[in-house]
Length: 166
Image (cartoon, rainbow, N blue to C red):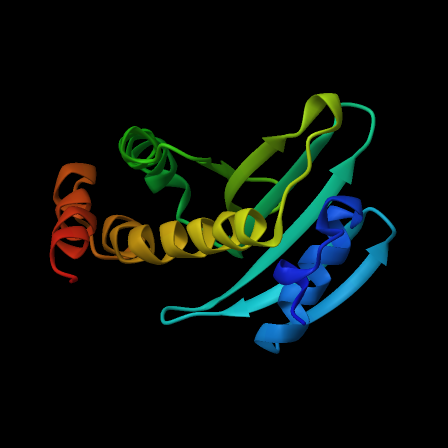
């Protein structure tokens, strides 16, 4: 019986569900604590670092999907413009750049107040959305930062990619 078929899924801690998904997908992971897990997810463009943490205080499952990035200082203002354009296309989650850590970050918080419970399908979709969003915009980021394209031109790659798959 898989975890998603488990009749008591609502009693399973969300990080336990994430660990089960990571094990099932054969992803490298480290259970940092009872309420936090870090994973490495290999995709087409690169390997992404994902961290999911449960906060009982505000009943939120927080996810951060990141990859290292060190744009030239002169490109940072255009990078923020590109990020704004990317976020206009994202309905779940948002991108940001953390210059001190040199990380491009996609983050999302799943609010589960009032005793709500996230199922394995919902958590799996959360992780897939993060990785798919990072994959969709990675080429646009690279073109803008290293290929001297404008944010508008770089976004055309991400938009064309969305329409190019069946």
